[in-house]
Image 1 (cartoon, one colour):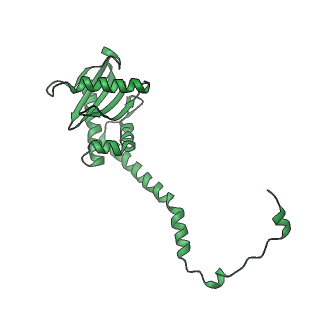
Image 2 (cartoon, one colour):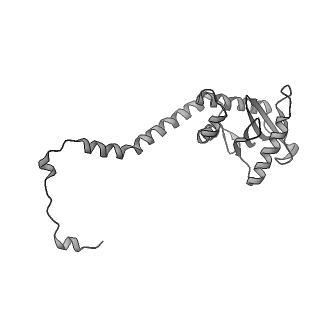
Image 3 (cartoon, helix red, strand yellow):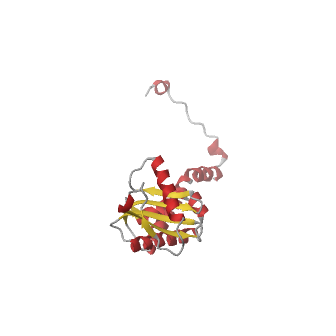
Length: 191
């Protein structure tokens, strides 16, 4: 089971974190810091997985990571997960981000946090892998984008309706029609 997914830059600044096991906020920050220290000091020519830090669960847990340009993608998993399977999952996640943002960079993760989390939720939910087929994930993201565009269109509908009514040429005789006053009995009714 996946316990946490962390993305941080070369300086240890977290750019995205998702914990599937409860840790209070201070503990989460310590886990991110310890994970960065463990992962960043490793050479590029060594394997991409190591035993988890003391905070995330010790030797029962593994840190599986990939380093792309200025970002580290780290999955904290228990011993039941396949290291190669998680490396493949990281690759699918990064390639999906790359297709959605056209050459994903650190700023995309900062300014589009909601979309990044949506993409991640298509891959992993509750610490369990849901989908690894990138075309299926991209189809779901495209469906979500269509829904967002429809909602934006619906939100603007009242304003468009008012401007459409204002632009209609109503003859002056209709504009000058006066409606009769309501009888006093109706005016006195209280609801």
